[in-house]
Image 1 (cartoon, one colour):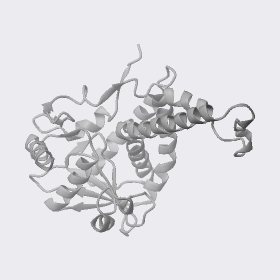
Image 2 (cartoon, helix red, strand yellow; image 1 turned 180 degrees about the vertical axis):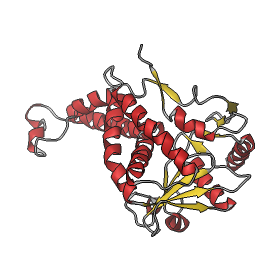
Image 3 (spheres, helix red, strand yellow; image 1 turned 90 degrees about the vertical axis):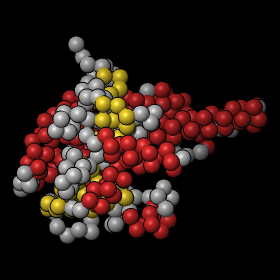
Image 4 (cartoon, helix red, strand yellow; image 1 turned 120 degrees about the vertical axis):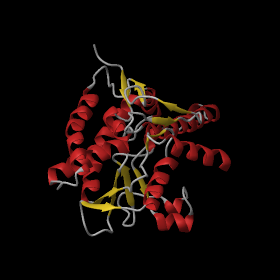
Length: 291
């Protein structure tokens, strides 16, 4: 029997943030903190199903089979090979491109396009008659997608996203692979948290100048000053960029580094999880006080 509920953020990944007492807490969009299990959390009905097939779910499961042992090797500060870096780059790319937050934003964008051009179409129909009707063949090269075709794709948006985002991921990983990587180890008494959108891009100097979320601070993988952050476990985070000259190095970082990466993770998330309930309570308190 095929499983119908698929993890948005995989169970294997979530388990890296469980505490020594086997507890993990989730700060939900409802501003509630719950204790639960990665088996049950961050799942959605048919998230990876495409026309009844689970081939995308199978692809990701196969990649995870290689990902787990590599993370264990990183914990021991072992030498990461070229092939292992490729696997991690692919895994990071999939997490970056295939999360639910990105999907929902793209769906909202598509919905706005449908509504906007449907209104234009209705207006043209009401204003034009007889010989005044516009001949669409006079515009473009004939290769553009029609509004009707776009609407059909929009109706199956979940499946379209599942396929297209996987295709994008299998291209984008090459850019992530070419970056210089550092594995950051947090000090005792501190932890990295994670979320339903754990891979983040930041251009810190641009944000200081223009402000987070502004057009001038938009971060792309090819920006020379961009930093990609990805918490791998509660004790280790990946920091990738173009400026650093060394690659695949291990660095013990102070607590302010941990706080900064946690901040980047939280600000782009809907669900945040950690072994540290007090940390989540502090985040919730700050969120409430800032509203």
